[in-house]
Image (cartoon, rainbow, N blue to C red; front, side):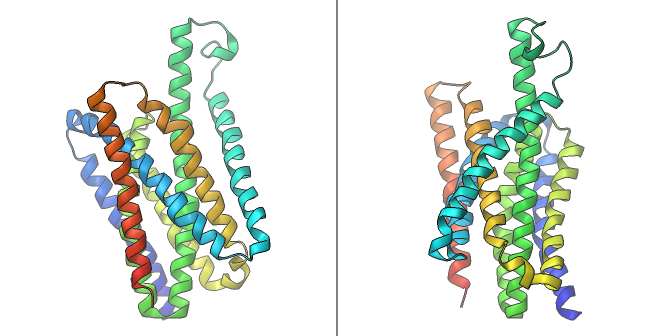
Length: 272
């Protein structure tokens, strides 16, 4: 029971720290927040892609036998296609009669505005889903470390927390950019972070049953982050094409990649 308590405490650490970081963003003045928001989305693109390609996919491949790698790659592909279908369903759900392209009753400008709004909303929903899967898997990994060694569990949980903070701030920026209010964005951010605790508790009681499924959880989380970054967020950066803004976007995407890669490598260097 003492070990279970430690798992609950340390799986909650990352969520608490990310919420505090998001809270700082929440307290900013609206004009400052609006100025920072596009930069946050650029940073989030780099962070999401780095988490997928530098962390989740390699980790998932390490957990399977060579003969299973093709199946795991197929899971990533199926995940990307599945998230495309899911986004279509979310867009249709927000497409009210007479107010979208499918009904053909509005002007082109109105249809474009409606489509853009629906796409941003669906991006927000997908980031919550993808983040929940990722956090759930993080909870499993933290519990597995604690079940191996308490010190290893503490180090792993702190490394996960450090890895999550920049990503969660970026996710919060995406939710605001998707049209969520500050209160709802913070609420969903907290809700997604709690899946880390859920993953840790479930893993404590049934880690043996979940171990075989872990690579596929990682693959699905990776596919969701790739889809969000490439299909939803990168196109939004093309609305501004001036040289200064473009260079800022490239630099912030690169910074997002660099931060995640450095944190990931540091976490690996701490492992015995």
